Amino acid sequence: MNYYGDDRRQPTFRAISPLGSLPLIVDDGFALIESGAIINYLLRKYGNGRFCSPDNSREAALVDQWMHWSESLFAFDQRMYRDHCVPFPAGLKEPVRKVGLDAKKVSIGYLHMLEDALGDDGYVVGKNLTGADFMLWFPLYLAGRDGWLVDDPKVSSYIARIASLPNFKAAIADTVTVIAQFDKLKAAAAMQDQPAA
Image 1: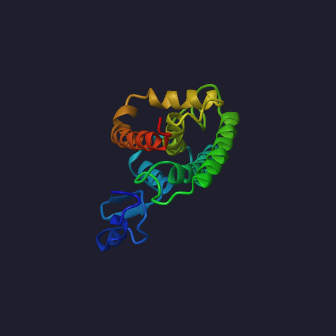
Image 2 (image 1 turned 60 degrees about the horizontal axis):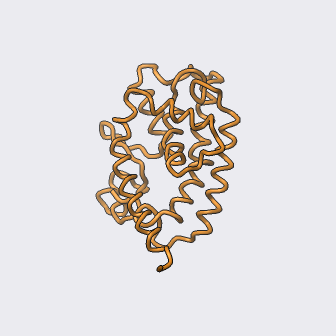
Image 3 (image 1 turned 90 degrees about the vertical axis):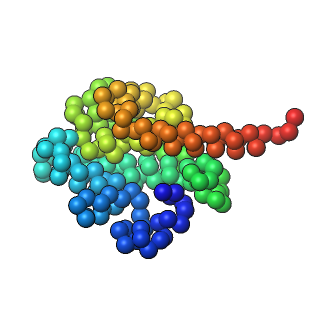
């Protein structure tokens, strides 16, 4: 489904997702949107206690903190960058490049915050994977692909630790295929921007 297409406005999709929002899961007839809500729902229902901290613990609060940080701060501005600086259909049809470049600066500033908070090993909240890591890895993975992590070695190491996990490659296989298609669009757009020799 194209994020910027009309599919999300169609009655069949709105019957499942009244807000027309993505991402979306439907589990046994129950529809749920928003990345963090989806991750928490899946972990609580199917995780058998894995990837979760005890309720009402400080660790659980920190997991929530980093989940919200990812979506409401870092990934929000990263999305603005991609909307305005990546060619359609990955970006907007009518982008404003300066808006995207300003958002990129803000996002990189947030990366420095994460750099300061991370340890030299383990994950974002302690030694074990949590929902916060599942929430963080995708926007950070994209940031690494876009070359944003040159001043953040701990963030780079953190992404490498997650990427080395046994199921990581299978989990992102579809995403890598789509990103490769968008990379071709970016390369073609860059060629068009080059002045004629």
